[in-house]
Length: 82
Image 1 (cartoon, rainbow, N blue to C red):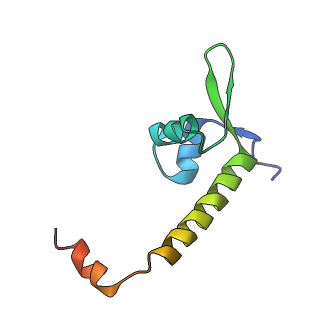
Image 2 (cartoon, one colour; image 1 turned 60 degrees about the vertical axis):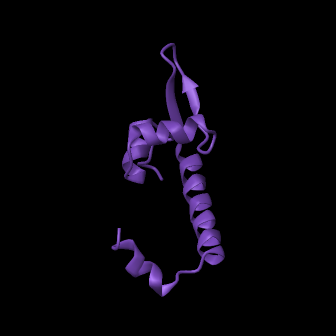
Image 3 (tube, rainbow, N blue to C red; image 1 turned 135 degrees about the vertical axis):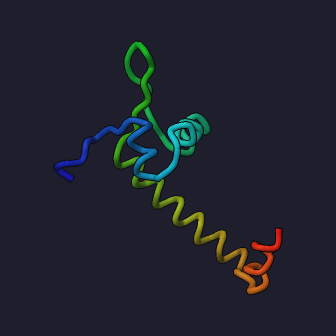
């Protein structure tokens, strides 16, 4: 982790998660992704360890969702019918 910065911008986080900065901002504002606000202009920063913990929580949440909502073969056909 020597090359990884401790804090990431929202744009950096968006790149890691392959999503938009607006989506990351929404995650931060909802409290789902812990971040700090620094400086006079209030720039947001996410600690690398917090991002990794968030990713692990999302894996756990997704696993729980999949277990509670098992895939049904007919769902695949329903997806293309709309």
